[in-house]
Length: 131
Image (tube, rainbow, N blue to C red; front, side):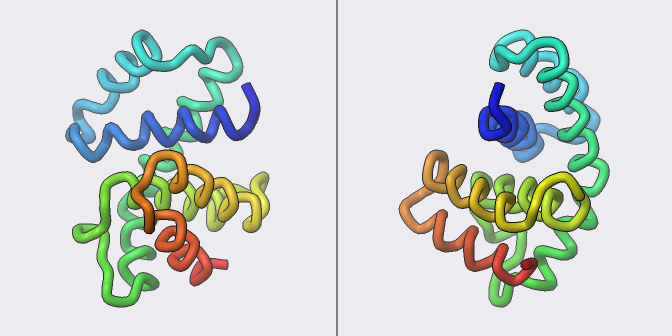
């Protein structure tokens, strides 16, 4: 899988947090790999590992978002946009392998694909504050 495809799979798995408690996520992760994800071997391990790292830092990421997003907070954000922002902020702040520009560009592309009409601009505007 390409990096973009891997990132999209991480987004889809991370999105499940919005509808399930953290205590349910190990089972949701298992369902994801059984039913929704075609990745195998090293790709599946990469998706799972990166998802786990993001999930561990979710509270920190949300706090950072709430500080930087003027007139917005995570409770008011759309679930798709919030999930994209969480993934991108993790990559910008904590993942040294992903350049900031790449993280922002990929987040905008995810927003165009999965978000609403204004999602790409919203995501880009918030992430600009982290760059």
